[in-house]
Image (tube, rainbow, N blue to C red):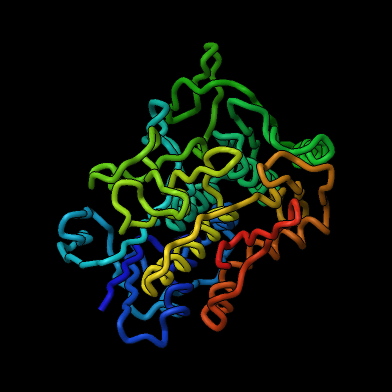
Length: 386
Protein backbone atom coordinates (compact mmCIF):
# COMPACT_ATOMS: atom_id res chain seq x y z
CA UNK A 1 0.00 0.00 0.00
CA UNK A 2 1.44 3.38 -1.04
CA UNK A 3 0.38 5.88 1.61
CA UNK A 4 -0.28 9.46 0.45
CA UNK A 5 -0.87 12.03 3.18
CA UNK A 6 -2.08 15.57 2.47
CA UNK A 7 -1.56 18.01 5.36
CA UNK A 8 -3.83 21.03 5.10
CA UNK A 9 -7.28 21.16 3.48
CA UNK A 10 -7.46 24.67 2.12
CA UNK A 11 -8.01 25.40 -1.55
CA UNK A 12 -4.75 23.79 -2.69
CA UNK A 13 -4.82 20.86 -0.27
CA UNK A 14 -8.43 20.00 -1.01
CA UNK A 15 -7.89 20.05 -4.75
CA UNK A 16 -4.85 17.81 -4.33
CA UNK A 17 -6.83 15.37 -2.22
CA UNK A 18 -9.92 15.12 -4.42
CA UNK A 19 -7.77 14.82 -7.54
CA UNK A 20 -5.81 11.99 -5.95
CA UNK A 21 -8.97 10.26 -4.73
CA UNK A 22 -10.53 10.55 -8.16
CA UNK A 23 -7.43 9.27 -9.93
CA UNK A 24 -6.74 6.37 -7.54
CA UNK A 25 -10.30 5.41 -6.56
CA UNK A 26 -10.18 2.13 -8.48
CA UNK A 27 -6.77 1.10 -7.15
CA UNK A 28 -6.33 -1.08 -4.07
CA UNK A 29 -2.62 -0.30 -3.67
CA UNK A 30 -2.98 3.41 -2.75
CA UNK A 31 -4.46 5.20 0.25
CA UNK A 32 -5.12 8.95 0.55
CA UNK A 33 -5.34 10.53 4.00
CA UNK A 34 -6.05 14.20 4.70
CA UNK A 35 -4.97 15.89 7.94
CA UNK A 36 -6.67 19.18 8.83
CA UNK A 37 -7.30 21.22 11.95
CA UNK A 38 -11.09 21.04 11.51
CA UNK A 39 -13.60 18.93 9.60
CA UNK A 40 -14.92 22.03 7.80
CA UNK A 41 -13.61 23.67 4.65
CA UNK A 42 -12.86 27.37 5.14
CA UNK A 43 -13.79 29.63 2.24
CA UNK A 44 -10.96 32.11 2.77
CA UNK A 45 -12.10 34.05 -0.29
CA UNK A 46 -15.31 34.85 1.59
CA UNK A 47 -14.02 35.48 5.11
CA UNK A 48 -14.61 39.22 4.64
CA UNK A 49 -18.30 38.30 4.43
CA UNK A 50 -18.12 36.20 7.60
CA UNK A 51 -16.33 39.12 9.26
CA UNK A 52 -19.38 41.32 8.70
CA UNK A 53 -21.88 38.84 10.13
CA UNK A 54 -22.98 37.16 6.92
CA UNK A 55 -23.74 33.45 7.27
CA UNK A 56 -22.14 31.13 4.72
CA UNK A 57 -22.97 27.47 4.10
CA UNK A 58 -21.07 24.96 6.21
CA UNK A 59 -18.91 22.83 3.93
CA UNK A 60 -17.93 19.42 5.30
CA UNK A 61 -14.61 18.00 4.12
CA UNK A 62 -15.90 14.44 4.60
CA UNK A 63 -18.31 15.06 1.76
CA UNK A 64 -15.32 14.41 -0.52
CA UNK A 65 -12.71 12.81 1.77
CA UNK A 66 -13.41 9.56 3.63
CA UNK A 67 -10.05 9.24 5.40
CA UNK A 68 -9.86 12.55 7.29
CA UNK A 69 -7.75 12.95 10.43
CA UNK A 70 -8.79 16.04 12.42
CA UNK A 71 -6.02 17.69 14.41
CA UNK A 72 -3.19 20.22 14.34
CA UNK A 73 0.03 19.05 12.71
CA UNK A 74 2.80 19.53 15.30
CA UNK A 75 5.75 17.89 13.57
CA UNK A 76 7.06 15.99 10.57
CA UNK A 77 9.77 13.32 10.79
CA UNK A 78 11.34 13.19 7.34
CA UNK A 79 13.51 10.17 8.20
CA UNK A 80 10.73 8.03 9.63
CA UNK A 81 8.25 9.57 7.16
CA UNK A 82 5.62 10.30 9.75
CA UNK A 83 3.33 13.25 10.54
CA UNK A 84 2.62 13.97 14.21
CA UNK A 85 -0.73 15.47 15.30
CA UNK A 86 -1.42 17.40 18.51
CA UNK A 87 -2.93 14.42 20.35
CA UNK A 88 0.36 12.54 19.75
CA UNK A 89 -1.00 10.41 16.93
CA UNK A 90 1.53 9.60 14.21
CA UNK A 91 0.55 8.98 10.60
CA UNK A 92 3.00 7.30 8.26
CA UNK A 93 3.42 8.31 4.63
CA UNK A 94 5.27 7.31 1.50
CA UNK A 95 4.38 10.56 -0.30
CA UNK A 96 3.57 13.74 1.59
CA UNK A 97 1.74 16.77 0.17
CA UNK A 98 2.47 19.84 2.28
CA UNK A 99 -0.39 22.35 1.99
CA UNK A 100 -0.50 24.10 5.35
CA UNK A 101 -0.86 27.54 3.73
CA UNK A 102 -0.24 30.91 5.34
CA UNK A 103 -1.73 33.42 7.75
CA UNK A 104 -1.63 37.16 8.39
CA UNK A 105 1.80 38.25 9.63
CA UNK A 106 1.03 39.89 12.97
CA UNK A 107 4.65 39.50 14.10
CA UNK A 108 6.01 42.25 11.83
CA UNK A 109 4.64 45.18 13.86
CA UNK A 110 4.64 45.47 17.67
CA UNK A 111 1.17 45.14 19.16
CA UNK A 112 -0.52 43.66 16.08
CA UNK A 113 -0.79 40.17 17.56
CA UNK A 114 -2.20 41.53 20.84
CA UNK A 115 -4.62 44.22 19.68
CA UNK A 116 -5.76 43.39 16.14
CA UNK A 117 -8.22 40.87 14.74
CA UNK A 118 -7.34 38.72 11.72
CA UNK A 119 -9.14 36.77 9.02
CA UNK A 120 -7.05 33.62 9.34
CA UNK A 121 -10.02 31.35 10.04
CA UNK A 122 -13.79 31.34 10.20
CA UNK A 123 -13.54 31.59 13.99
CA UNK A 124 -11.33 34.68 13.74
CA UNK A 125 -13.75 36.28 11.30
CA UNK A 126 -16.72 35.49 13.54
CA UNK A 127 -14.99 37.08 16.54
CA UNK A 128 -14.41 40.23 14.53
CA UNK A 129 -18.04 40.24 13.36
CA UNK A 130 -19.20 39.96 16.96
CA UNK A 131 -17.10 42.99 17.91
CA UNK A 132 -18.49 45.01 14.99
CA UNK A 133 -22.01 44.12 16.05
CA UNK A 134 -21.35 45.67 19.46
CA UNK A 135 -20.60 49.10 17.97
CA UNK A 136 -23.45 51.54 17.45
CA UNK A 137 -20.83 54.00 16.25
CA UNK A 138 -17.05 54.09 16.12
CA UNK A 139 -13.91 53.84 14.05
CA UNK A 140 -12.67 50.74 12.25
CA UNK A 141 -9.06 50.58 11.10
CA UNK A 142 -8.19 47.99 8.43
CA UNK A 143 -4.41 47.53 8.29
CA UNK A 144 -3.15 46.28 4.95
CA UNK A 145 -4.05 47.74 1.56
CA UNK A 146 -3.84 44.51 -0.44
CA UNK A 147 -6.87 42.75 -1.86
CA UNK A 148 -7.91 41.23 1.47
CA UNK A 149 -7.84 44.60 3.20
CA UNK A 150 -9.62 46.30 0.32
CA UNK A 151 -12.42 43.72 0.23
CA UNK A 152 -12.78 43.79 4.02
CA UNK A 153 -12.89 47.60 4.24
CA UNK A 154 -15.58 47.95 1.55
CA UNK A 155 -17.63 45.09 3.00
CA UNK A 156 -17.54 46.65 6.49
CA UNK A 157 -18.43 50.11 5.18
CA UNK A 158 -21.39 48.76 3.22
CA UNK A 159 -22.77 46.59 6.05
CA UNK A 160 -22.12 49.09 8.86
CA UNK A 161 -22.67 52.61 7.46
CA UNK A 162 -22.74 54.03 11.01
CA UNK A 163 -19.04 53.18 11.41
CA UNK A 164 -16.09 55.19 10.11
CA UNK A 165 -13.78 52.92 8.11
CA UNK A 166 -10.12 53.69 7.31
CA UNK A 167 -7.95 51.56 5.05
CA UNK A 168 -4.28 51.88 6.04
CA UNK A 169 -1.33 50.47 4.11
CA UNK A 170 2.21 51.11 2.96
CA UNK A 171 1.05 51.41 -0.65
CA UNK A 172 -2.14 52.75 -2.22
CA UNK A 173 -4.86 50.11 -2.69
CA UNK A 174 -5.27 48.67 -6.16
CA UNK A 175 -1.75 49.49 -7.27
CA UNK A 176 -1.64 46.39 -9.50
CA UNK A 177 -4.87 47.28 -11.30
CA UNK A 178 -4.96 49.04 -14.65
CA UNK A 179 -5.81 52.78 -14.66
CA UNK A 180 -9.53 52.38 -15.46
CA UNK A 181 -10.07 49.55 -12.98
CA UNK A 182 -8.24 51.60 -10.35
CA UNK A 183 -10.46 54.59 -11.03
CA UNK A 184 -13.54 52.43 -10.51
CA UNK A 185 -12.12 51.11 -7.24
CA UNK A 186 -11.44 54.66 -6.00
CA UNK A 187 -14.98 55.71 -6.89
CA UNK A 188 -16.31 52.79 -4.86
CA UNK A 189 -14.20 53.78 -1.86
CA UNK A 190 -15.53 57.33 -2.05
CA UNK A 191 -19.12 56.11 -2.44
CA UNK A 192 -18.74 53.94 0.66
CA UNK A 193 -16.93 56.75 2.56
CA UNK A 194 -13.83 54.62 3.14
CA UNK A 195 -10.86 56.88 3.82
CA UNK A 196 -7.39 55.77 2.70
CA UNK A 197 -4.13 56.40 4.54
CA UNK A 198 -0.76 55.49 3.03
CA UNK A 199 1.90 55.15 5.71
CA UNK A 200 4.19 52.72 7.53
CA UNK A 201 2.71 51.31 10.74
CA UNK A 202 5.13 51.54 13.67
CA UNK A 203 2.98 50.12 16.46
CA UNK A 204 -0.54 48.86 17.10
CA UNK A 205 -2.22 49.96 20.33
CA UNK A 206 -5.57 48.90 21.84
CA UNK A 207 -7.06 52.21 20.69
CA UNK A 208 -5.33 52.76 17.35
CA UNK A 209 -2.06 52.66 15.44
CA UNK A 210 1.09 54.77 15.57
CA UNK A 211 2.56 55.62 12.17
CA UNK A 212 6.23 55.91 11.31
CA UNK A 213 6.00 59.69 10.93
CA UNK A 214 4.79 60.16 14.50
CA UNK A 215 1.08 60.50 13.67
CA UNK A 216 -1.47 58.30 15.45
CA UNK A 217 -4.73 56.98 14.00
CA UNK A 218 -7.43 56.30 16.61
CA UNK A 219 -9.63 53.20 16.29
CA UNK A 220 -12.22 51.29 18.27
CA UNK A 221 -11.47 48.04 16.47
CA UNK A 222 -8.52 47.01 14.29
CA UNK A 223 -8.39 44.36 11.56
CA UNK A 224 -4.94 43.14 10.47
CA UNK A 225 -4.61 41.90 6.86
CA UNK A 226 -1.02 42.94 6.14
CA UNK A 227 1.65 40.44 5.15
CA UNK A 228 1.68 36.65 5.04
CA UNK A 229 3.66 34.18 7.09
CA UNK A 230 3.77 30.40 6.77
CA UNK A 231 4.01 27.70 9.39
CA UNK A 232 7.55 27.10 10.74
CA UNK A 233 6.94 23.33 10.57
CA UNK A 234 8.64 22.89 7.20
CA UNK A 235 11.86 24.57 8.32
CA UNK A 236 11.79 22.78 11.68
CA UNK A 237 11.44 19.42 9.93
CA UNK A 238 14.55 20.08 7.85
CA UNK A 239 13.02 20.82 4.46
CA UNK A 240 14.84 23.40 2.35
CA UNK A 241 12.90 26.66 2.61
CA UNK A 242 13.32 30.21 1.31
CA UNK A 243 13.66 33.41 3.36
CA UNK A 244 9.90 33.39 3.99
CA UNK A 245 9.80 29.78 5.23
CA UNK A 246 8.22 28.40 2.07
CA UNK A 247 9.35 25.01 0.78
CA UNK A 248 11.62 25.42 -2.25
CA UNK A 249 10.41 23.14 -5.03
CA UNK A 250 11.78 21.84 -8.28
CA UNK A 251 9.92 22.34 -11.56
CA UNK A 252 7.53 19.48 -10.75
CA UNK A 253 6.58 20.88 -7.28
CA UNK A 254 8.67 18.36 -5.31
CA UNK A 255 10.87 19.57 -2.47
CA UNK A 256 14.43 20.05 -3.71
CA UNK A 257 15.76 18.40 -0.53
CA UNK A 258 13.16 15.66 -0.09
CA UNK A 259 11.53 14.61 -3.39
CA UNK A 260 8.95 12.44 -1.61
CA UNK A 261 7.41 15.72 -0.40
CA UNK A 262 5.30 17.86 -2.73
CA UNK A 263 4.56 21.46 -1.71
CA UNK A 264 1.50 23.34 -2.98
CA UNK A 265 -0.27 26.64 -2.45
CA UNK A 266 1.01 29.37 -0.13
CA UNK A 267 3.49 26.98 1.52
CA UNK A 268 5.54 26.54 -1.66
CA UNK A 269 8.19 28.74 -3.27
CA UNK A 270 7.54 27.95 -6.94
CA UNK A 271 9.58 29.63 -9.65
CA UNK A 272 8.12 30.35 -13.06
CA UNK A 273 9.59 32.30 -15.98
CA UNK A 274 8.34 35.57 -14.50
CA UNK A 275 9.59 34.89 -10.97
CA UNK A 276 8.37 33.24 -7.78
CA UNK A 277 4.59 32.81 -7.62
CA UNK A 278 2.71 34.42 -4.77
CA UNK A 279 -0.03 32.69 -2.85
CA UNK A 280 -3.60 33.06 -4.09
CA UNK A 281 -6.51 30.69 -4.63
CA UNK A 282 -6.04 31.31 -8.36
CA UNK A 283 -2.53 29.85 -8.28
CA UNK A 284 -2.93 27.48 -5.33
CA UNK A 285 -5.59 25.23 -6.81
CA UNK A 286 -3.62 24.56 -10.02
CA UNK A 287 -0.57 23.56 -7.94
CA UNK A 288 -2.74 21.03 -6.13
CA UNK A 289 -4.12 19.56 -9.34
CA UNK A 290 -0.63 19.35 -10.83
CA UNK A 291 0.86 17.67 -7.76
CA UNK A 292 -1.88 15.03 -7.77
CA UNK A 293 -1.31 14.24 -11.43
CA UNK A 294 2.45 13.90 -10.96
CA UNK A 295 2.12 11.67 -7.91
CA UNK A 296 -0.01 9.29 -9.97
CA UNK A 297 2.56 9.43 -12.80
CA UNK A 298 5.25 8.39 -10.34
CA UNK A 299 3.06 5.54 -9.06
CA UNK A 300 2.81 4.38 -12.66
CA UNK A 301 6.59 4.47 -13.06
CA UNK A 302 6.65 7.65 -15.14
CA UNK A 303 8.68 10.80 -14.60
CA UNK A 304 6.74 13.81 -13.25
CA UNK A 305 6.23 16.75 -15.58
CA UNK A 306 7.10 20.40 -14.88
CA UNK A 307 4.45 22.84 -13.68
CA UNK A 308 3.57 25.84 -15.83
CA UNK A 309 1.20 28.56 -14.74
CA UNK A 310 -0.05 31.91 -15.95
CA UNK A 311 -2.30 34.34 -14.08
CA UNK A 312 -5.63 35.21 -15.66
CA UNK A 313 -7.40 37.84 -13.58
CA UNK A 314 -7.51 39.83 -10.36
CA UNK A 315 -11.09 39.79 -9.00
CA UNK A 316 -11.93 42.30 -6.24
CA UNK A 317 -15.21 42.60 -4.34
CA UNK A 318 -16.24 46.12 -3.39
CA UNK A 319 -19.14 45.20 -1.15
CA UNK A 320 -22.01 42.96 -2.23
CA UNK A 321 -23.24 45.20 -5.04
CA UNK A 322 -20.01 46.21 -6.74
CA UNK A 323 -16.74 44.68 -7.87
CA UNK A 324 -13.92 45.11 -10.34
CA UNK A 325 -12.18 42.40 -12.36
CA UNK A 326 -8.78 43.21 -13.81
CA UNK A 327 -7.71 40.76 -16.52
CA UNK A 328 -3.98 40.24 -16.58
CA UNK A 329 -1.14 38.79 -18.61
CA UNK A 330 0.37 35.47 -17.42
CA UNK A 331 2.94 37.41 -15.35
CA UNK A 332 0.06 39.31 -13.67
CA UNK A 333 0.70 42.64 -15.35
CA UNK A 334 -2.66 44.26 -16.20
CA UNK A 335 -4.29 44.06 -19.59
CA UNK A 336 -6.51 46.83 -20.91
CA UNK A 337 -9.68 44.78 -20.43
CA UNK A 338 -11.57 44.87 -17.12
CA UNK A 339 -15.08 44.43 -15.75
CA UNK A 340 -16.89 46.56 -13.19
CA UNK A 341 -20.31 46.89 -11.58
CA UNK A 342 -22.92 44.14 -11.91
CA UNK A 343 -21.01 42.18 -14.53
CA UNK A 344 -17.99 42.11 -12.23
CA UNK A 345 -20.15 41.05 -9.26
CA UNK A 346 -21.52 38.10 -11.26
CA UNK A 347 -18.02 37.14 -12.39
CA UNK A 348 -16.55 37.38 -8.88
CA UNK A 349 -19.36 35.36 -7.32
CA UNK A 350 -19.00 32.69 -10.01
CA UNK A 351 -15.25 32.44 -9.43
CA UNK A 352 -15.59 32.45 -5.64
CA UNK A 353 -18.13 29.64 -5.62
CA UNK A 354 -16.19 27.56 -8.14
CA UNK A 355 -13.91 25.55 -5.77
CA UNK A 356 -16.63 23.53 -4.07
CA UNK A 357 -18.33 22.56 -7.33
CA UNK A 358 -14.91 21.95 -8.90
CA UNK A 359 -14.07 19.34 -6.25
CA UNK A 360 -17.18 17.34 -7.06
CA UNK A 361 -16.53 17.61 -10.79
CA UNK A 362 -12.95 16.41 -10.40
CA UNK A 363 -14.03 13.40 -8.37
CA UNK A 364 -16.28 12.40 -11.26
CA UNK A 365 -13.74 13.24 -13.99
CA UNK A 366 -10.28 13.47 -12.35
CA UNK A 367 -8.41 14.12 -15.60
CA UNK A 368 -10.21 17.35 -16.51
CA UNK A 369 -8.30 20.61 -16.57
CA UNK A 370 -9.28 23.96 -15.20
CA UNK A 371 -9.32 27.34 -16.86
CA UNK A 372 -6.42 27.86 -19.26
CA UNK A 373 -4.76 30.35 -21.55
CA UNK A 374 -3.22 30.16 -24.98
CA UNK A 375 -0.02 31.93 -25.89
CA UNK A 376 2.47 31.52 -28.69
CA UNK A 377 0.52 28.62 -30.14
CA UNK A 378 0.96 26.53 -26.99
CA UNK A 379 -1.89 25.73 -24.64
CA UNK A 380 -1.12 25.61 -20.92
CA UNK A 381 -3.69 24.37 -18.46
CA UNK A 382 -3.82 26.45 -15.30
CA UNK A 383 -4.51 23.27 -13.36
CA UNK A 384 -1.47 21.55 -14.82
CA UNK A 385 -3.40 18.29 -15.06
CA UNK A 386 -2.57 17.60 -18.69
